[in-house]
Length: 490
Image 1 (cartoon, helix red, strand yellow):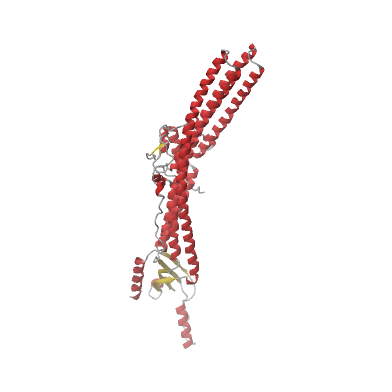
Image 2: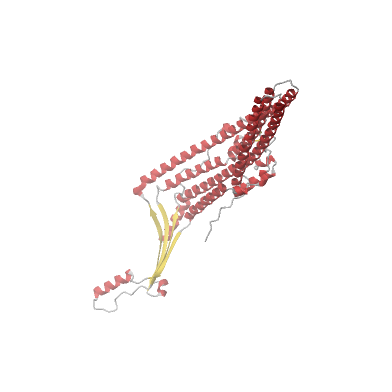
């Protein structure tokens, strides 16, 4: 009866027990960050919420396919998926503390029991000449023990809480990789397309300069152009030809980058992407949303918040070490000279009772662990605040850069159009004898430079546009699950 009462008392204490340490409260974000972005201009962006699959705004089926393939086959994503599986396994390990631990032993042994040995020695002391008092050999033994930690002070609960928050942080880290992979894939594809445009521009410039060189050579034979004129034209032609292999090499490099992002080797360059020579652009103002939605959407902010939750829970784990550990234990054992005696009343023994363990001499170590955990939680809080500020800064910088490039691209395009007109007019005047060859050469150089500048601006505009989408932190919400690589077995 006393054992039953003791067990009932400890069970009641377990139910009434509380988890020591601070309860987690999510940190607040700056109220000034909740509104519209300060760098958003009507031309650059709107307050509409960005779509989950932002790359579909480009209306490019090839880009859609490449991003989907990258989100399932990218090797960095598979690493992140494996890390998440590891953290989820740790949650299962922590939850195992809610269940009792058991052990079972058994096997044949040779010897005597302590009770038989004591009885034999006593009988021999009373009557040394008596026969039949030798102890019998033990045939076999078995033992079963079980113990269950009563979570009075919440050490197990806080451990589970910390493991669960860490797993959620790992999930957010995987989502952050998804955001980066989607943006990098779109960026690599945009580079392939813009370098394709740049190759065409470079070849067009070679054709323009070649035509002017041929015209100059004809006039040199007629005596209306000098050796200096044809030499100048030859220099310009060589410079125009030198641009072509450089841009072609950059395009091949971008294709290899794209192949790696979708989990392929350089020999498996996507052919449909290789055919693109027009930079992808979203013609409308980019849907941006606001700062509050940004902070809810960005996986790195969520990861920092979950890391903070895990750090706070670990304070409770350390604090629980200041208190005693209470366990309920039980055991059953048997022994006998025959197998039948193992479960008989004479060979069977059992016991049930609580076990209190309090490492009092090392209490200073436990207190030091509490201080360490508190300091780590403070660092996690500071890290969260830093990530929030960084997310807002990156978005504003991306918007500022994109808005500036929009204006630069428009001016560059106007300059290219004016240069085309100027070169056409210069050719007409030179052929009519109304202007010098130097005027024609200057107009030609200006037209070539304007074409190259516009191609470079188109590439930068595409990159800046994708950078805005990456800073907004979308693209992971409806992404497909990533399979963890299987370990080969022999």
